[in-house]
Image (tube, rainbow, N blue to C red):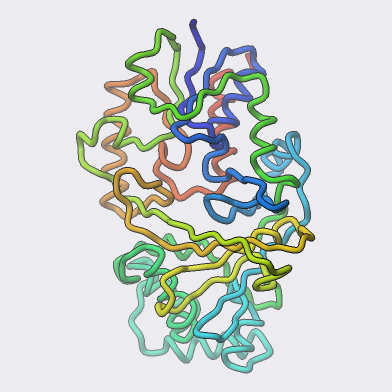
Length: 369
């Protein structure tokens, strides 16, 4: 059997490209090492609740093309992500906004809040581009950094904030209004019925083989392929020939509780170092599910090692340079392999950016042919 494309990974990047290629009349085969499609956005219905098995995923984008694309496969609800931060029993609004500043300092205006921040950074020699700690303090002052950033971030990444790149914190908005929507994007929501049913529709009519490791498959398959779309770890693809890229992993403790409600919100972040987990997710709130039980997941950051899931890329200068060397190696040694997705491109990607990247690749591959 001959295929135009072997697509390694049934996550959002692979599924988007497979759908676009198939629409252009290309023959695609999708494989995935997991037992499920959807990658990290996989949802499973348990007790009538769509559980985000690999952690909370809230779709948000300002890209109209991407929004229109995903809406072809699912209707989205009007969920707005309003995150609560729990710091040793004190509750704050995230992202940083006037509710946060009022709770911390008693201020009620933008001018008062900015004055508090200015007073806290006065006399400090801060370079916002040096590291995450200096960027965070220059942005929101010492109080917010100590209570709402430092403990959470160091748990998440397993490193001191002054050793982490500033780019990580730049994703988090700061507002001097009473807007507690976590995202700035125009479009936001959760697929009604969960992400899995959305990806199933994207892969409709396309052959998918699960529980399949790429290296073993490619050695033994009688199939041939014009090109390979690879969304796995690039260092693993080349047997770590140039060294290991760094990743962070997660583990989850999920409970079914005989309660209608546990915490009153989908996401509560635990920002103190006293708790080992970074957040508790209550899944029913994502789709406003009404049922007598609830399901919660405690999310624990974890050191990455072989056999665990690589959830996050650590995009410091050293790792980015190593990735670029691997990318050059791929051009020389594997010109028929196209790298894509969070791991293939070694980027800390939001979902909409993954889909946009796959759509751009499809457009360049087929060029309206």
